[in-house]
Length: 342
Ligand SMILES: NC(=O)c1ccc[n+]([C@@H]2O[C@H](COP(=O)([O-])OP(=O)(O)OC[C@H]3O[C@@H](n4cnc5c(N)ncnc54)[C@H](O)[C@@H]3O)[C@@H](O)[C@H]2O)c1
Image (cartoon, helix red, strand yellow):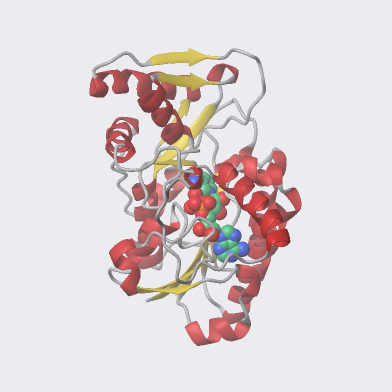
């Protein structure tokens, strides 16, 4: 198959493109906000360093994709709150552009939505039939993009993903389990804000990639919305499990620090029967395996690299953009990278 992946250089997109490229013709449509980390698979993947907003009918006619996977966009609350208008353009308007072209040309589309659209719901695990109550710019833009696709694209498959965890070549340490594991590993304390009583569903990035591959390859998954997660736990319980496991792996004390200031945060558990009956999906990674894996990864990367934290990187890009506006382009051709003191 020919598969076009928007946001193919992101945390989820990178392992997805790598996996798909083993059996399919993959084009990643991504300007590389966090760089490109495709490694040796780079030769098998066509890279189009452009924004979704620049995609045209002609581009799709040339590429002739059998599927479009739409991952591109702003991917968390801090980014959306930092630049709300841009978040809307990236998450809602860009979905309308790629979704509109896909619908017009009859190409099925798989959309990475977020379980955060459910908002604050403390009753029972939620099914796809439960109404959404998005809180904040990010979730509202995702919910709006879902509604637009449901109305305008008859073959859209929408995944309401829990928070993703685990190692990707484009690493993120600003996600729940990844961030708490990094804190415990680097600083000897797993920190929980606001009491941690909220429930969050999670899924390992490779299990999520497996779900995408199954959906794309089975060709039989009916359009509509699907919850995707392997666990739904209270944040305080996830933190306690991480701290306990870090103590075991590292052989030293790792504290659990809880700030009890009350604050109502989004909270939702997911029912995932629908996806499990639509595809042969056998998730492999729980919190335990993920923490083990993350400890290995943290020893191999710079855990303070600002690119691993979307909002830190975005602030830096914003600052650099303002400076470059005054300084002009910095031409480094013929230069060397040796640091030293004058
Ligand atoms: N990671 C999670 O926990 C999680 C959970 C639920 C939903 N999601 C959704 O899954 C998708 C992917 O998440 P991620 O964690 O891989 O995010 P990410 O931030 O790692 O990657 C996003 C990618 O999109 C690209 N991008 C941004 N704007 C673009 C544009 N206009 N055109 C083309 N490319 C653009 C960026 O360059 C980046 O490579 C997002 O839509 C996110 O909202 C993620």
